[in-house]
Length: 224
Image (cartoon, rainbow, N blue to C red; front, side, top):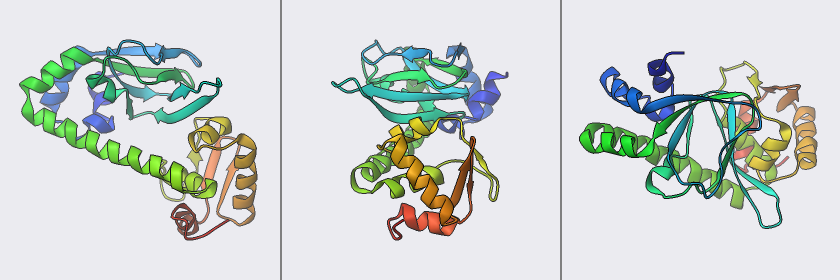
């Protein structure tokens, strides 16, 4: 699989030109992980960040009582551990949810590349600011919105062609952890959404039947 193509398909590097992508290639390394394999653990020294080429990775922390709190599920085209560029240690644990191929970008070499190329630095910073805005909004939703609104927002954030089903690469248990609820509560919500013809979730395919209503649920304009 061509590294240039993989880097270009990543949101973080989507605005870079061919010359800028070529400059990243020498400091990028492809790595493969099996399902359930830990990529790094909270507290490990931060050595760089990652681009997901295929599969999915969950980012989580373990609470004092031993329960996992999933912070984010990262899928193909997305990056994780970018904050580690400016930290000594990884602030959370990353684990492959399925067989996954990732591209590792070494921290110090990448920072040196940014220092030599101010234009590249501004492009990367602009992308990171947009990502931080998304994460801030997600945290606000988790704090202020109810479970149906959080789930509706999660579904709307998924990439899908209009009218086409969404192939879910993560389990319902993981989705429940992401939106801060239990699998049982999520299952009851899915049943209500199916009865009211908002969406269906069968097997690993989710199909939005009424996007307008889903948007209203996400914004808390409609209760379900």
